[in-house]
Every structure is written in structure tokens, then in C-alpha cells.
Image (cartoon, rainbow, N blue to C red):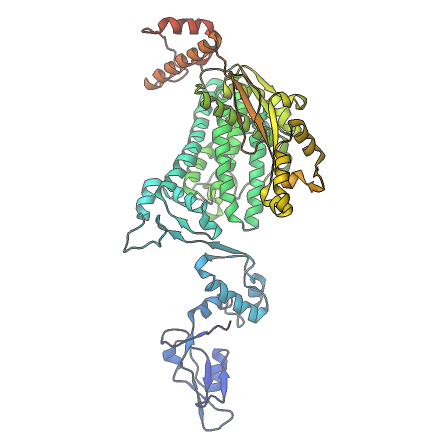
Length: 602
């Protein structure tokens, strides 16, 4: 479609066209110098009041004059001319312009699709036969909570100043950056969403940081030595969770670099948020006792070295998105680095890009990833652990069994697991699973015994097979859903299913799911959403189980009293108990003396 570039108004850039009264002669002036050559008038200001009275002698009809047409440019013509006008191209900076054109990226709202994006494209195509930009970062519109446009008249949105003062600028930034807006979609603004960022990301992240600082202080007092970050100790650690969080961190750094370089900004923040959840909900949780020194101070230091390393990395990665909280973390983390002693406060833009020495996290580059620390096996093994633990917790909730009450056994069935997942769950991660589920035994069912615990069922993928089979769908569905466990396993292993003259690809045309099949009231199970993992728990309870649970509740009550009194784990206390149930408590404690003493001593 043609673009009418003229507007009939006073304010605007005059269209530089001079014509005869009958429009038979037309002159388009290309520069101030050309206007001077044609009219003999030199101007320095191109607004209408300085241009409109200039006349150009006619070349075709001597004695007559050409006058400028009355119209001005559509303002979007000027916006589309921005790449050239800002460099005064082609009159100046020709080489500089050519080196920077087209632009690496532009950024604007979705409403500019028929505005700036369009005019940039039209003019650059007309002039150079190529776009004016290589990448486009387009944001959607932020709407009120009711889906309407934000309106001062309707007052259908919260005051931004109040939101920032209430939750902080970082929370608002993350809420918006981690929303559909960065994918050029609309967002219904909800104040509760900003609160969710604070509760689900910032508070756990801050608590992980605070936990680190507290335990560094504890370790320093115990070891009588300063804590000095050492990358070699981080890399040398063989603890499976250390290896995993290190691999996850390096994978995150690699991903962020790749996505930012490709201008896929909408994928970056979700990955960073997921990582913070992994760090706080899993790494710190699984290693809480270890970092407190329960497995010796040497191992505690290794864990603290790893935690420091990943905290500093994630602080640098998050700095462009949440600049204030990351600066808070950095100013405290930098003090541990040897280069902190060489700092030059107030170094400004010349500040060295060295962590510790640099005055601000915002002077630092994004960390580069270490390819040698990427470890897909460690990541797969930890994913298996997390799935098992989450399903185990679901089972406990079904039977209303408190985590303080142990269970005898947890049985896990993994459908086509990787070797790394099996080795991890059966090996170095086994203790973590037993601890998280408070279980006494863990069994990973070998493939040849799966049929004793689960049934593999198949379902047709109706979206795919419906079009393919048509009237034969009913017959095929009946056959597929009635297959035995052994037949279903054989079908998936063979990679083919034939029903009379119909050939079906199990990988793309069938859906598979494991279901718990063992009988017995003492068993309760949960299946993963993908249907490839089943976790069953033996819920039977005897005196040993009950007394162990009671003793843990006793320990929990004592620790709450300690906390209420403002005491730390290292402060010695003397414990007394009395009242109803004292005999039961005494019996439970007598059966679990060592465990109670260990927990009360931290």
C-alpha cells in the first residue's frame, strides 16, 4: 500500500518540493546548499517560517518563480529517517554511518508495528534495499488488572510510586521482565504478582545469602582462619550436589550468553528465576547441615566455597535485571576476595572490571562459562532426585504422614532412565533422598522386576492418530488400551506397532504412562505428570517408626524454644519436660538417644 507522507498543518518538517502554479515544473531540493544554489538564499533554520517565502526561478519558463508546496512531512517520515539524520548522512560521517548500519537492534512497543517499525523498513528498503535493523525487541502493552487500558481518569491501576516504595524497584522490574510483555503480548498488571516476586524469589535468595554469611562467620570462628574464596577448591569438590550446582551454574551462564547474543531476552529471566529456585530450594536445603559443619569443618569449607562461587556468579548474572539487590549482595561478597584490598573507592568508569576490586557489580562483565564443568550426567541425576523427592512428599500428603515421622521404605520405578540417573539415585544421592523423605530404605526397581510394581499403559495420541486412522480409530484405540504390561514394553522397545494393516509409530503416535499396580493397604504411590516415574511408600507404622517421629517432634519443640529465647545452636542448654504424654516422650527419646543428641547439638 502507498504511504501518504504529507500532512496539511503548520508544524512539521517542510516537504522540500518547489513547483510552478500549474505543477508542470517540479524541483525536489536535496540540501541547504542546493537550495542556496537554486534560490540565492542561504538558510540555517529549516522550519516553515524561514522556508515558505523562498522562491526558485523557473528553468523552463524564465521570468516565473517556483514556490514550495504547502504540505509538511508526516512526523513518522522523520522517525523513519532517524538512522541517517542522526549522523547527518550523506553530508557527513559517511564511513561512520556505513559501519553502523543496519543497527544491531531496535526496541519499542507493539503499537509501533504500523509506525516506527514500518517507516524504518520502508525508507531503508527504498534507499538501500535492506532493513534498517537486524533484530527487533518488541514489548507488549501493560494493561490494568481488568484488561482495559490504564487510565488516569478511571484510576484503574496502582500508583507506580507506591508500588516501588512498597515492594522495591527490583521486584517491579523482575515482574515485568518475567511476563508476557517481553514476548510482545499484553499483561494485566497485578500488584499481587510483584509481591509474588518478593516472596518466591527475593526472600529465598536473600535467605540463602544470609545463611552463607552466618556460616562463614561460624566457620571462621571455629577454624580460626579467614574465609578466602578459592576456585580450585570449588572445581576439586566431588560432592554430588557441589558438582551439580556448579554444572547448573555453568549451563546457565552459557545459556544466558547464547540467548542474549540472539536477542531472545524473553527466555533469559525465566531461566534465571528457575536457577534461583534450584539454588535456594535444593542446594542450600540439601546441604544445610553440612554447611553448619555436621560432616566436619573441611567439608563445610568446601560447601561454603561452592556456595560463595555460585552466589557471586548469579549476582553478576542478575545485575542487569535487578540492579539494586545485586549491588547489595556484591558489596558484601566482594569483601572476601583478596583483590578487595586493592580497591580504589570512587573509581568511576575507569574502575577495573575485577570482582572485589571493582566498586560496583555494574562495572563487571557477565561471567564466562567453563566448558569443562558442564556435566549433563550430574544434572540428570539431580533431576531424578528432585522428581523422587517431590513424589515422595505427595505420597506423605495423601496419607497425612508428617515429615518428622519416618517411613520404612521408598520404592522407585524409573521408565527408561539414563545410566546417570540410576547411578546417582542408587549411589551418591541416595543419602539425600533418604534424608529428604525421612525414609529408612530406598529401592530402585530393576527393569526385569517392573511388572511386579507397575503397569505400563498406552493411549493413542488422538491429535495425530485421529487424522491418520479416521473410522479405524475406535478399533485401534480398543486394541492399544487393552495391551498388557509386557506387550506395551515390547511395543516401545521395538519402536513399532502393527494392528492388522495399520502401522503405528509409538514414539510420535502413542502416549505411555506408568501406574502403580502392587496390592496392599500399607502401600501408597504417586506418578509423575509425564508418567515415567512412580514412587511408592511403605506407610506401615510400628513402635520404632512412631517413637522416631515422636523424638523428632520433641527436638523440633526444643529448637523452637531456643529460637524464641534468642539462643544459637552453639549455646548450651539444659532440657526438662513434663506434663501429659511425658512417659511416651521418654520412651521415644530412650529409643533414639543418639539421634536426639546429634540434632540438639546441631
